[in-house]
Image (tube, rainbow, N blue to C red; front, side, top):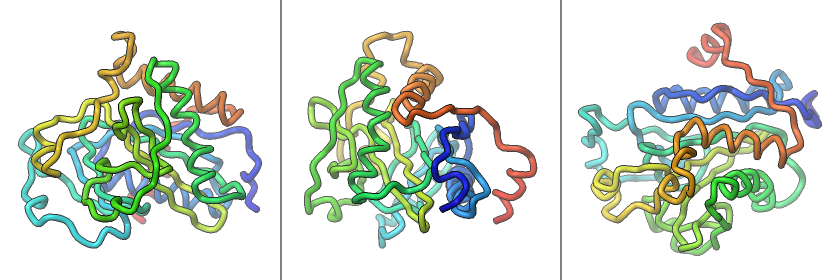
Length: 247
């Protein structure tokens, strides 16, 4: 058990917009440091620039034409996550990441324990989300958002809205996931040959709450309440960035 196993003080890393390579490097660094007992539990939210497609760690193949895709005159990055699942388009989405120590219990129970802060937060924004139901069709699709597992969150209409994936290293746990806020439907169709799920910002009742910053603030409050923690905001330092980018 590391020094942070029972910690009630978590680090909040401010909203970060960066490339796919940088975002995955930060998540990997956080779980590594936490597993070594050198970093407290952490919560962060981030967006991807340029737009990207992330592949699940065990996803063996993807359409060759993805390598030639562009968005706003920039090539789409393609990166492999350290977590499982299928491909996710990161354009018009918001990603969350929780790094902590794994609770005892089945993997699905841990997923649901962490995802509850998302359910609570989105409910306060006027959006009701529930858990999906696992089925055998999941692995037959390239697109993570085609089907929902028991670890994913769906709208009242049955559309997948938040897809999550998990990595464990010993007692250290990383769970991150994508929230579809305002994905471009033409780009989504071009990639996956199917319509995108519902954009969550369209379901928010109060138009003033649609900005990403307001959504993040709401989810931060929900996390503090659900996990019963104190979140201490602390940007990554220059020394930490150097460590992250040289790994």
